[in-house]
Image (cartoon, rainbow, N blue to C red; front, top):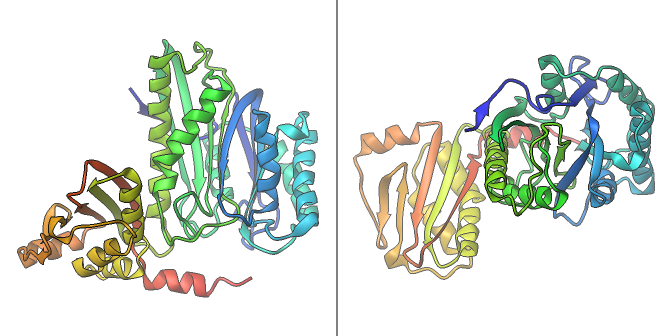
Amino acid sequence: MIKTIPGNITAPKGLKAGSVHCGLKRNKKNHDIGIIFSEQPCKSAALFTKNQIVAAPIKLSRKVVKDGMVQAIVVNSGNANACTGKRGEKDAETMALLTSKQLNIKANEVIVASTGIIGHHLPMAKIKSGIIQSSERLGNNNTHAINIAKAIMTTDLVPKHIAVKTKIGGKEVTIGAIAKGSGMISPDMATMFCFITTDAAISLNTLRSCIKKSTESSFNQITVDGHMSTSDMVAILANGMANNHNITSSTKSDLALFQKALDYVTLNMAKEIVKDGEGATKFIQIEVHEAKSVSDAKKIARTIAESPLVKTAINGEDPNWGRIVSAAGYARVTLDESKLKLSVNNITIYKKGLPVTPAPKRLSSVMKKKEITIQLHLGMGNKNTTLWTCDLSKEYVSINADYHT
């Protein structure tokens, strides 16, 4: 049984967080730098953006997680430290070093993450002050939890966080997470962070396998605008302080329980990112059924989800089946028009190459809902996929037109 509890990354045993405003954001009430710290060294695994252009902290953190042992994460918002050359790489290293000194740990046990504007060097005097102050404010109460969730926000409107408990091998295990992301969101991650902590005892290889599997079914199945960023990261720390029997690939029942709880956390965070999409008014679930392969299903789902015409039609509360079907048709997947069936919130609007006319009032009522489900049956096989996205509004255009470097 998975139980949602108050808090987030500070909920597991031995985890603390501290954050402050150091001057990266204009509003002094908004925290913009923080530290996540475990009292005990952690097994660690992480996944990073697949963009070839990556921020300096990504380059550093890739090296850190290769060793699999991490005790802290230092993260700032307001500046991505991306496309900043050798100086940017040095600044990321300095962030790790400053954090390690404050926490009395090794610099190669610190993950560094930065998000925000691209192409600007970090103001390191402010960063240094922020790291010192954050380390002095470490704690595990609800205020610490909320503040660190807010500290990583950029264009987000709301903080995203969760904590759950479950029993594994008779021991209570906790998993907590914070996430950020609102725009530049695409499968294979985007300008998003998700930091996950747990007190579960788990082998390194198993942890790596679990987070990869969990990310595939959550963060890699969302899109807001199809734009992949330079800075995204999903990282998990496991300190073993729950004292459960060590989870490995051979402890199948324990592994299944942990994976289920982790999947619950990551899917919750992924959906929260979509719901907070820049200018979003609708949460859209796209289901593709009866494909020849999962790959085919994903191609079609993503093409529909990233079509500006589909997204604007839903924003306008119009079930424009022509836009949806034509998007599926250019996904470079072989289709048979005579086998297609398209439904919106279980109301069939297109079947066997022809429109189906549902009751106007019923369809109009469905399109006014905040959550829309598009169901496309291909009639080509037995593979399925689900992807989550949001609509495209005038506000999205305004937000990004007003965002300047």
